[in-house]
Image (cartoon, rainbow, N blue to C red):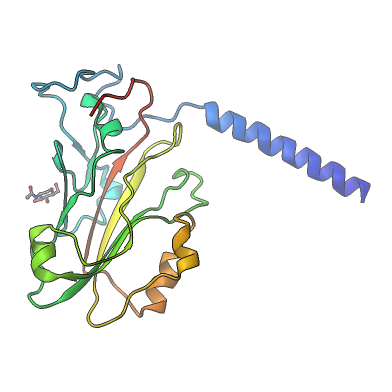
Length: 228
Ligand SMILES: *[C@@H]1O[C@H](CO)[C@@H](O)[C@H](O)[C@H]1NC(C)=O
């Protein structure tokens, strides 16, 4: 028993040290175009360099015929949110994006799911999936126009990646819902983290998504947040 306790304490210590180390190791800050962490703190116009860059090749797999637009930034499907203009801070407060599926089938009904598979970090995704947004019963005409409304099962929560956790992927999946009734049990819907997306899909007999996309952003805490 005593040996067990000692071993436990030692492994806890080791874990704490490891955690401390990983927390203080600066993650590569993606984006890369603004190593000085600058951009334009005033958020003014005219910063020609301040445009989203394409995701790395390895992350383009989910890029389908689905477009995501945020105010100011525009279409960020398959892009990395740039650090300049405080975009990485602003996106944490912006309202839900326009999500457009231009080739939605007339008369069909769709389900939209937005998740972060990199919670709390891509290296250690023990809280995957973080559920950001779930809306069912979306009419084709609405999703064609980018107007996401229907039965909001989980309210939209903006990306708020924690400090030092690197770039997070924010993934959008659209499913052909048909006449399925989609729900998430109340208790499960209280927590966003560690959501069992595969189980949810199985329970609703949903298989392949119709289309998908993703973008990436990471925490930017080095500058004072702007007033908006
Ligand atoms: C949005 O961006 C994606 C990926 O770069 C691109 O395929 C798509 O055509 C863009 N759509 C619009 C309307 O700009």
